[in-house]
Length: 321
Image 1: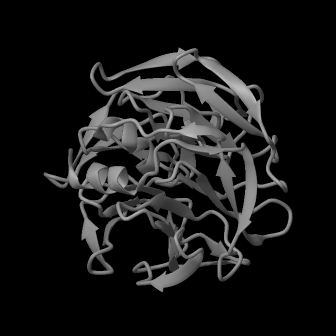
Image 2 (image 1 turned 120 degrees about the vertical axis):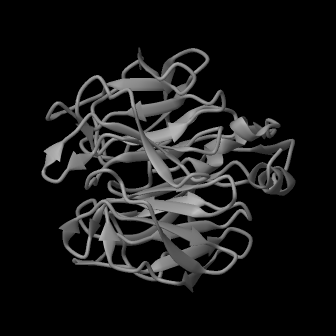
Image 3 (image 1 turned 30 degrees about the vertical axis):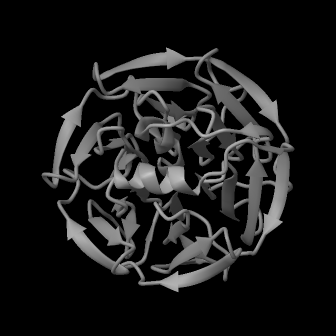
């Protein structure tokens, strides 16, 4: 078991019974949307970029679930939004593309929580924004779809932190942007919704890194985009908000290939951040729906939380969009 899995496994509480639902947490220091977030190996959450009010920001904040408090961290090298983000197996965080300082960007940065510093990495092969991103069980990172400049794309790339290099993978069946993505406990990747071939979609696809192939899965109950998604401790996937189903919450069970309606968000929300924490709850931050918000909510899936051993199963905590 690597360092990330060990840190997560040592932080989880087995056998805790809880009730499904939402709880308010300490708000972000300022309104935020079009940001990205991921859970770190120490259980904290890193939120990067996005908009504060009407202005793009380089601000970075860390949330500590133990103290329910936010702490400012070293800012991004430039303001950035609609980017990709996931935590790597060595505990660092990879941020890719987005709109950086007002321009479409292929820039890639790595954040090290141990030094609170950013380092430039090999850029994407082309500018990309509003794409999906998650860390795979082999430590590589899968980036899917989004926009090449002003055009939606089906292009898929894999980044290897060990070689700092990008490799082309089998493209999505159709161009897709503003979708959500997370890595499942079996190592496959689930991509949901978005705009597919230019139309709002409920389409769901699974990518298998072992075969480099895409498979259609049960569609979302309703089409949506700029929603958020994370893999839960039991291997299911939680999808929240988005347009046009902006208050709804659904859970996907990979074992049955079926969707279930869950308790709705306390308020409408889209273009928000989401990641699963080491205690099995899910942290949802910010909001671009109607009026910008700094609101933060915690979702408890309910039931008895028992962590599944092994790095692949724990990757769900790290693979947020």
